[in-house]
Image (cartoon, rainbow, N blue to C red; front, side, top):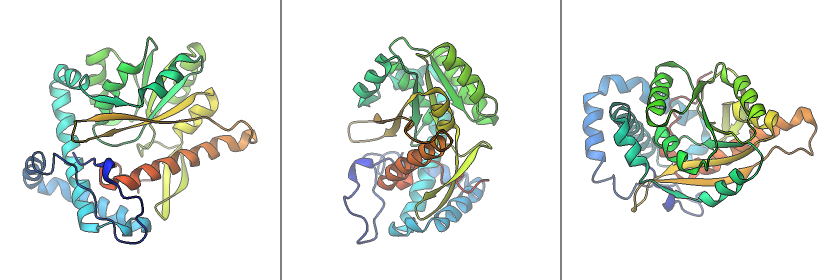
Length: 294
């Protein structure tokens, strides 16, 4: 996996930013991934074309080394697909591995869980998202967890995986927002997990993103606005010391704004936070192949 967020430079405006390389996988994991990519060359062409179109659509990415960025994105996607298949095939092993993942910033999540407000864990799409869900189970402290995920074949596999490791209910985004709103109304101590930058679903709003425009899903902002939940961001990282789930900042809807403007303002704020995060490890964000979908 290519997730080297710890080595981002403080300033990237003055010179072209070479895409950072993960500390261990460059010489251990990547040879395996390169072999898989050669075996799946035909299947990867469409994905590669979408990635190139995305990079061309966002002028802010010009500061990065284009060839290294594309190579990193393709490798990262292949690695995540491999891990996903292994987790689906061996869910008990995946659950055991998830126990070894270090959680950084867990005290922030603990403070929110201790309150009476509902909590939304807003995962950013870095690394194997299903393992992040499994790791997040360690943070619940007796609360119930509900997962919102895209439908389709991958959604079915994720649902099967999570049900096998912990009986976690998974709702698809086509029908789930109203259902989750009802669940939170009945159980204010519920924890809802949303991979909020997963570019799927019909509810969208355009936001500025790397000098271009991203048609971004609004499910997180909708649910936060309707339920008054505290939103906490989280993302997957790798380091010399192994995989980590980092807990980010807390966000709440600004209730001082006009009611009609609250959801859009919160939506824009969350995707500004996403862009800031992606800048430090652009090759690790998993949605480059999807972000031009309408």
